[in-house]
Length: 87
Image 1 (cartoon, helix red, strand yellow):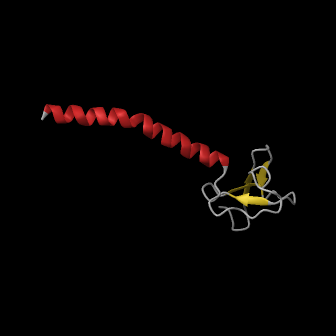
Image 2: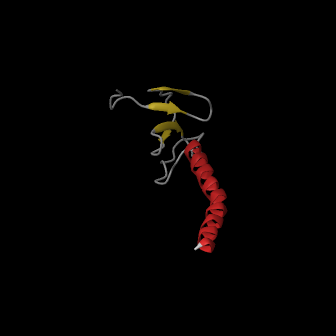
Image 3: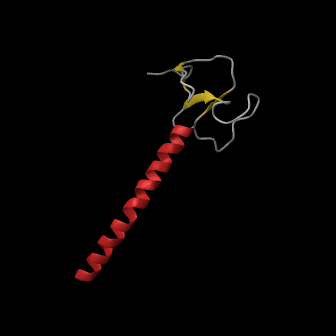
């Protein structure tokens, strides 16, 4: 069980660890609760974390899920049409 004082750092630059703090500005992704360097996440060292910030890994997962849903949509529409024709 993780305590409130434990956090996960996992950055695109390859640095990761538990309670890792190198003194750089860091942003937390609310989707996966991991921290990244602000600079690696597209911000400046002194920039505040945007309210709508989501890390690149979570954005990629969301984009992949949306693409899979779009790919399934024609098949679902065809199945609905086939069911209607059978009635």
